[in-house]
Length: 591
Image 1 (tube, rainbow, N blue to C red):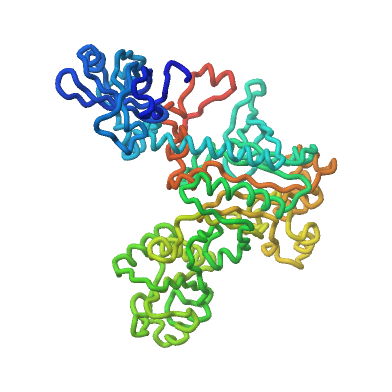
Image 2: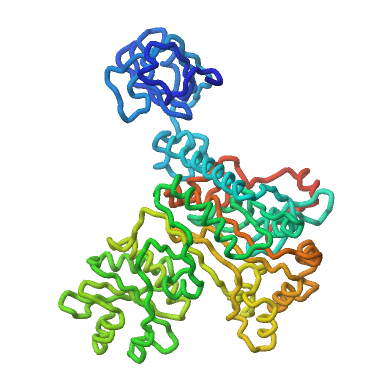
């Protein structure tokens, strides 16, 4: 064996009866029977073993100890009279001859019961994360994470990728989120930034002549937490390929991910390649989302023309009206109202509804506004008795997004419309290159500014001349989506300096701006860059899906809370004035 033990706490079987063994671990529970008899559950990383105390000497060792003290037990294995089939070591027990205290728990009461820590308040769990992680159910998520990362590394290496680490201290770069800044002690008034992603470095590696790169990359972004996003730092399977395009990237991930999801996932069925490809505009129109959950068989239908001219404010000219038809829906009115209220919370807009009853009549909700067009509505939406129809209306994007939220909630609520126990992948492709900024009201990059526009320099020049609407330009950008969760964004990169400058000129940034903001990459591309493409699936989100968890914090060893605080370590924290002076920082009180 190893360390100071002969076996682990999940290892002993009937074949070990009569052997003298040594176990170590935490004293999970003690149940005393009389003065000199007790059952002790000993737990280590691997499992639990029952220890039966039968002597006054051994009882005197146990009595002073609080639960969760660490002990060493030496004794003889014997067969249990009352076996426990739910326990790996349930056929045996150990009678101790020697008990040694290795680490005493000095608290009579724990912040929570270890095996029920997931029921505790999250603040307590994060403050005492080292105790929370003793819970086998919590620990198992971290073990899963380790196994998945190891499998990803092996798969990428088997595909000819080199694991190369990129810098953590780098330059600030406008990549969409706020940087974490690090003051430079030797350069007063200047700062490093923690990388939001290794984006520029991996493209520079392609320019340097490396053919296939990957790393399990830490990324740092000062952004708010969500259920599927941890504030501060996260990890991604970062990869890039030289002399490659979109199909090459897709082929690699379609080969790497399904076996890992099938082996390690809560569900053992995963999409087989090739994954479905859905254009961004189609995804929004059919699913109301650019990360559709394809386990749900419901789609949005456009009924704008169908209700045109009806005297009902949501159907007013200029609005888009979308419908979600759900067959065999027996939801009660109370459940419908609750679902609509939840849609409004998530989407910011309240949906509408109506039914086709068993008599073929439109009833409930907004049905009174549709009676004059009943036959047309039934025919256009292919309604059959028992159908429920959710309706959203408003500006096109708002109507789509509200419909997307309603589709997702209906799919989960109505039996028969969601094949939940599987992993369903798809690619969202052909994202818009540009959009109108909500704050600026001017043309801005929609996603990654380093993406190659579909049509190259020619399409950008046509847009510059007014021959093409810039908003109609798509990019070789793509998202990988699984079960309604965006796992990754990627792109075929814009490796041509001339196209890069023209792309930035569209958003009012000239050649000087490109050179100043991205000097290394621009200069490197001027020395002959290969076409290259890449992607970076989020490891944290991937493991969250595999574990079947709703919160990403459940699969991170030491996560921050929703306010980006590490309450276990007390970060962020104040520092001494001497430390501030060394890095030329002065704290200014807010007025």
